[in-house]
Image (cartoon, rainbow, N blue to C red; front, side, top):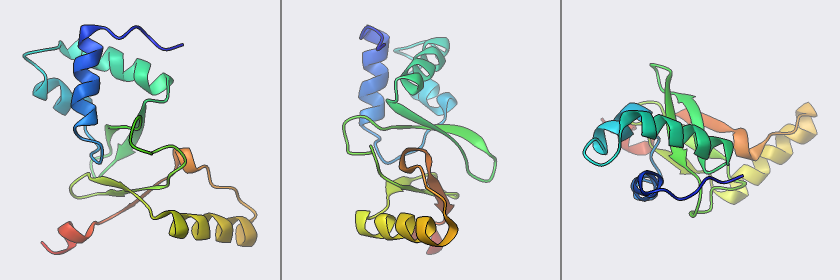
Length: 130
């Protein structure tokens, strides 16, 4: 059951909605919002929002840091995600490509991919250029 929209939660949602294609650690969020919301409130609200399906929690990057991505309000539901291991940016895979990948895996390996839980890691075009 969704929690009430407290002032702290609204601040967190506003921040996350301004960074829809980013995977951000709880520490980075807490640091960015330090003058508006306590660190414990960030962690508590992220846990609640994860349970509600409003944020995606992913262990990512080379350091295997836990990061969060806001999934509400910008069409994340049912998308496959690609996450850059260098900069942390997460983007939606094109639907046609995702559908072909899912279909191929289902047909060839008799395995069903869970779109909502799948993140493909690699290096984005911007980071490849560096």
